[in-house]
Image 1 (tube, rainbow, N blue to C red):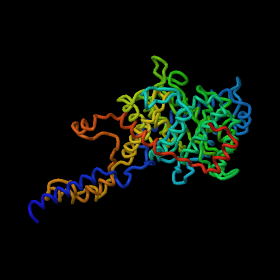
Image 2 (image 1 turned 30 degrees about the horizontal axis):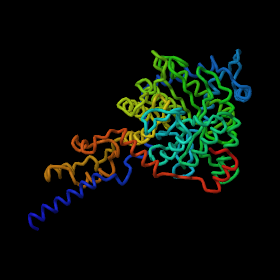
Image 3 (image 1 turned 45 degrees about the horizontal axis):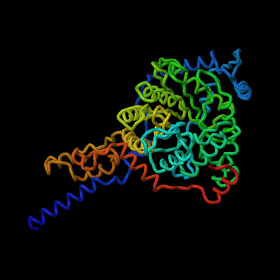
Image 4 (image 1 turned 90 degrees about the horizontal axis):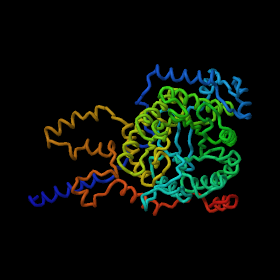
Length: 508
């Protein structure tokens, strides 16, 4: 081989190696469902103290404003009158509810390949929220959320692998009628994705007809109940320490139709719960346990996500604060408490207070979502797309958050220490051979297996970045979101199913 040919061959080989390095990995190095539980903000003594205080609150202070239908089943289960309209939930009743609760269960997708098992130590990111504003991609400012936004958010997230289930992230403020709103929200979910989904019901009487819609999508009367692919988000306990009658009625109806429930406690520090973090955790744990006792008294063992979501307010102003160290450690502690009890845990994270896609946005989202994941939250709600202290939802945020979750899952995967990975022979070969590890067999294998390569985060040198027009993350995410919305138009309902639904409901 001539020297010229040799140089050409080396350049060609270098180009091939660079192209291979630039290409996305063939295998996801850290998929959803990685194991959490490594971050433990509470000691064993702390866990016991908080738990014992929660049980004392339920037994001695009790819970108020218990609707008559719930009071009847609670008394049969072992609750006691305390007077003044309050009911005691004795320790034995609470611990029986914990013992008989579903410890794991499947959140079904209409596509079974997208189903996930909730519980244990696996971590999944998903959505939540009821934003009333959308960050407009054209103007860059907020406007009222619409039904079209909900359809667009649903089909956008359908393409994002790190969002494992989808709860409607915004309210269609252009649909004023409560029944029409519940119907059209449910329709948007089942039309645009086959992932597990979740919704809310404004009133109990809305549940049965909407289950009829789910039956059509599932293939016939009663089919949805056999394999429910929708869960309900309900807040039956209102802080501090009382039930809400309308939400309790919704729980009765959901359990009657075999809909899994996420019973959400959303106390706020210094307002509806103590400002001290330990006191806050004791009260919010008691309130979420009250929801569990309610479900146990109505239908023992029914699938329930133990959704203890500590929320923080800025005590100077009273405004909700979705990002910061306090909400990060509180939701991590909540996950630790729920997992310690062996209950499927739901926590909230990534609820940035930032309005723009900026440094505050990135710092608050990364800090809070990583803490919740490291603590082992089974379902991490609100973690995708939410901005402006949950008042807003953003298409660009969905794109950026999905990439953030890939990095978080990679952190959870950790480091595999094996004889092969320790690389004694590879180190010796590099030192005694070419003096570097580029292109080595171990390097190439690790490149495909162990590293996540972002599509949005910029790793160019400054000159290359300038030559591309100096783009920022917001602009890149906007471009990607627009591409997806232009190209991805799923319709997961057959023509017959769609016609049957439209024949029974006012689809807007």
